[in-house]
Image (cartoon, rainbow, N blue to C red; front, side, top):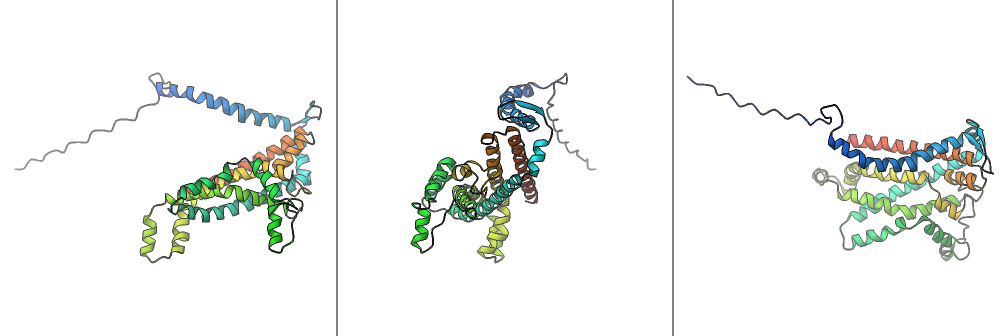
Length: 314
């Protein structure tokens, strides 16, 4: 007669530690977190929340050029903004500059990032040199490019003359000025995109590429159908970072053209600055800056949702 041995039961998992004490209050660990959060909350309140609230209040009032406030006017500044052709022109210029620069910087960043991901002697030195445009102050970059674009002594027209082309008034022609500024931004920030994408390429797993090689895929097919989908989360992060910065584009434009000629480079940020400090219309400028804030939030939200969808798919 055989006896059946009873298997030992596994020990029960210990319940997760409660975040609350006996009296229902926060544990000592939770209480110790609050002193660390308070400085960040105070800084956020002082530098973000209060200025936004003040801007909202200012946009709903009528601040005169002498600094006096005529009182609450409701949505009059926003109605004036929507009815102004200058506002819609600034929105168009902002979106065109944003779309062109983001597309070109992303495409060139992927190509240059691939070259930077190749392990060759001197790669780290070259990466450090490429960071110089991105870490240089935008004001300095604008001043240097103004010298390059100089109609008589600039290097740009000297190159055109050397190859037999006519000189160009880079910053004085309304049809060319916006593209001249876009070229400056592409030159300055494409290396930034390339370094982020190069880091993403070096972190890709090797197994999918090995499987594609076994299936007989060519190098181009592996790059397009394997590497690019795996790299999309990194590309989306880089694009979102550039999106927030491009929509707020100000310093380079203002130094080089101040929104001209004929408002051809008058971005929404430059338009708001001119309304506040040149036309001395603080309330109208506040309404313009709130519209810029709304545009930044909408575009950043679109890229955030796109990035989350890509993360879920992968």
